[in-house]
Image (cartoon, rainbow, N blue to C red):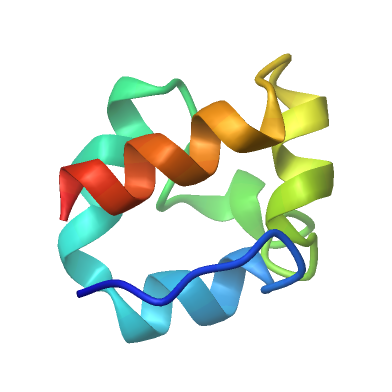
Amino acid sequence: MVNINSLMKYGDVLKQYPQLKPLFRRLGIPVSGCGIYYLLDMTLEHLAQRYNLATETLLKALKRGY
């Protein structure tokens, strides 16, 4: 079971749950490369806003995708 909330940082989620990387890719959120360093410190709430997703939608997708 994935225990994720909207205040977790994106970098922490990637470290704890690397199996969610394909799901982030499907949502259009990069998981590797030099362009993600500024994303790693974002909370999931800010990340969802940046990629025009509802926070609830992102959290549901992550919990379901696990």
